[in-house]
Image (cartoon, helix red, strand yellow):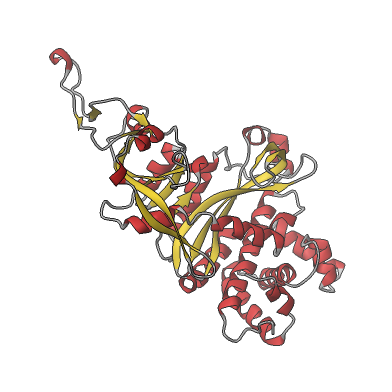
Length: 409
């Protein structure tokens, strides 16, 4: 999504397309004034200007104080469901981009003070350090011709969830309780899976992939995944045999869960003992210029140890994907995947390496559309803002694909 489209928005034809798109996707907002305010806000996010917070945005659009009060109420307090808008955008745009995968990640929003919902000193990959920030979890569709947010969830640390006066000031609904980032991501994925979208494997980094409950939950929902795990993740290798043990001395309830015949090992240890012929050089990424980038991979059927040993679940075989570039002294990356046993090895490698595109998405959402510019202190307002940013992003994706859109000379 090039910044040039923001510059081109004053063009009459582009404005007309924007109005039509927002009218279409905001149909579920019911009230005419809500749809008007949604269009105005999305215009402000797209059209050129500086900071995309509400007051300077409306000033640039020539709106008065009465409109400011109306849009402020629409953002912070109006009881419309942001998921309705995100869903409408997703179902309209996803078929246009050739969806390859869904990507889970989170991003930090730097904040001053302590009143914005969820704000605290916490680690942010965006900042690259511990800083005062909010963290939002999101799911995005990644396709051959673009990307598309599928949902947003603000992470609330436990101290926020347990502080009733603070919750009241930030207008956090009573039904909202503490959930980990993987739990938030799983809920977003489950929600999107119920929409009319092309199904695709879900990708995530090790902060999510290391969570056995996250992987098991996705599998229970019949969602495919390729998720990164750490080298220390423990697995039972392909030689492992599972069987239900006999009842000890004929007493007590007979065992019903299969048990392994050996101890688990780390993913790194398994990788290091693989024979030379286990490794294959495969294309795993295509550059913007259309050139394939290759690396060396091994693909091994394993059972994740945590689910068997800690959660007492039946063994479930899945892929352990290992990358060990020839120029490196050891393996560099590991993934677990529940894709089928007959899955193409090249597809597994490409999916494993596709997640990096989410960083470009966040950069565009922040740098061009003001994802991190919301200055309100309302929990509902934050999610309304992210839904409207999604709307602006979805329109620009369609605009980039539109043959009638103007391009720079």
